[in-house]
Image (cartoon, rainbow, N blue to C red; front, side, top):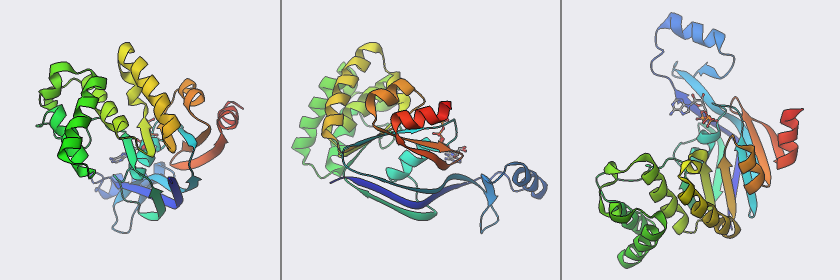
Length: 245
Ligand SMILES: Nc1ncnc2c1ncn2[C@@H]1O[C@H](COP(=O)(O)OP(=O)(O)OP(=O)(O)O)[C@@H](O)[C@H]1O
């Protein structure tokens, strides 16, 4: 049973470059509350502030909001990339992550080796990993490139491999940033078909996007972030309408 629960969740990023006292004061004075000084006197960006929400099985959630609102940071935090500085986050369920195409890939290894490695990491046997690599190969359509080190891949090839790999593992929770919509038309058609199957199978889907067509097509609930805070949370049409009003 998949769930994501947060209470008072906060993420901060230290900005090491702003050490000069006068510069620090100028930044802090002009930024409102988003930039602040932490206990070690560092200037930090409050990327996520006091987030509380609960997402349960069957929910398809869009994260919306302007540039810098905190959408990607929230996805990465749920995926375990960042450690909260305050609050509670509980995630139950196997996560499929479509956030950073090259994350978790060793660029010196081939696409196939990366798939097998990820499978082993997930507790599968090597034989299962090889079978998975064949399945991924079929879907990603990388041809001979599957046996080339991934540092030789184009951006679109990385997207194909990451998408095929994340979705082949049938996650309970699928986290997705909108970059995956950047594939070529042929791949996007197949990706959308697979996504439709997966959305039916996955317990929770979360997509960070600026595209309201994507929100309406795939999601039942929207969470609007602004300045690192939740400013609206509810059925898609309510949240989108509230923004227009
Ligand atoms: N690794 C980092 N180091 C320092 N600051 C960061 C880092 N990642 C994000 N931030 C800051 O955290 C805030 C939230 O950024 P985030 O990328 O989550 O926004 P977003 O809503 O996904 O924006 P966009 O729509 O532009 O992709 C921004 O102020 C950003 O500058």
